[in-house]
Image 1 (tube, rainbow, N blue to C red):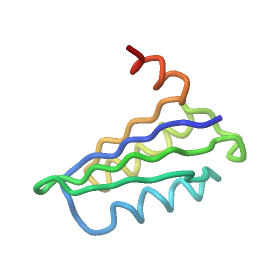
Image 2 (image 1 turned 180 degrees about the horizontal axis):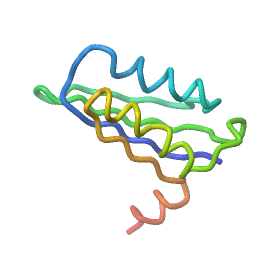
Image 3 (image 1 turned 180 degrees about the vertical axis):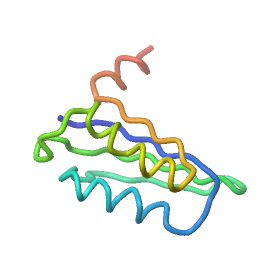
Length: 89
């Protein structure tokens, strides 16, 4: 299953590394990634594949809480179908 992850927070060294290391530990594959710095704030959106991870969206969200706390970030994860349903006109 594909999912959309968003990461936001005050910019500092190590954000991409901490997120990608945890996703790799969970067996989650990053399919696409886009990031930008807006003033002093870091924003990143990722399309990820959970199939090989054998983890649910809920389990990945729970695991990413440690990264959120350690890095001072807000990380959101939604199944791709849910994301599209919420953003359809």
